[in-house]
Image (tube, rainbow, N blue to C red; front, side, top):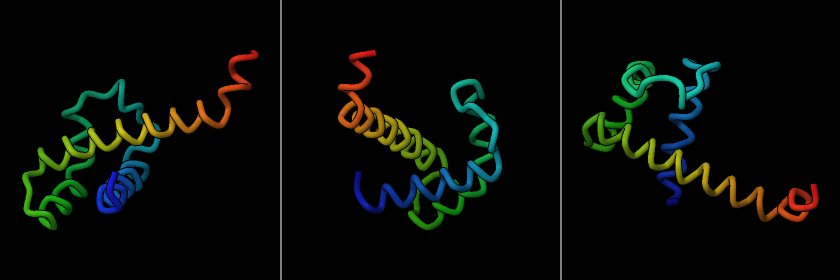
Length: 85
């Protein structure tokens, strides 16, 4: 993930924490997520000259990549502990 990608992801995640603090993205329809995130997605779309939908797709890809990185880090850091439980 590039520095620019990380900054975009962090910006959207910070906004999402403010507007949907208790929402489980896996249980909320994508259309509802887009509506809640539309202001930040539009801001980023204007900055980058991209359609809002493309920004949302990029966000979803980056969020998935971030989750996989986190999972791998947890395995690396605590794998020995978890395998003995």
